[in-house]
Length: 155
Image (cartoon, rainbow, N blue to C red; front, side, top):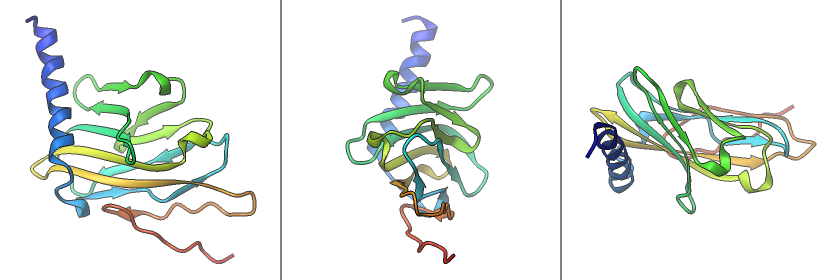
C-alpha cells in the first residue's frame, strides 16, 4: 500500500469511528440552530466546540438519513471533501461553518455536525434549517448541544 493510500485509509477509518461512537457530550458543542431561510437565499450553519481543543475532523450530514454532505479536516493543509451533488453550492469555512448557496426545497431539514475532538471524543450538534415565510423576520439565536428552540422575537 502506498503512503498516500495509507493516509486516505486512516482518514476514512476516523470518519467511520465518528459515526459508530455517536454523541458523547452534547453540551460541549455550540450550534447556530434553528436557522430560517427563504428559497434562493444563502445560509450558514455553524457548529463549533465550546472549549478550544484539538479537533481532528468534522462531518456534516442530514440527520434523518445520514447522507454525508461534507467532511473537513484541519491541519497544515486544511482538507475539505464535499459530496459531488453539493460541490457547486456548499462550502466549509471557519469554526466548521457549512454555507449553503441558493437554498432549495430539498435543503430544509435537520443537519448534524459531528466533530472528533481530543479529549472529548465524538461530539454532535443538530441544526434545523426551516423555511422562512415572506412575512417573517430572520432570527439566528445561539444554541448549545443538540437542538434547542427559541420563540421568535417580538417586533
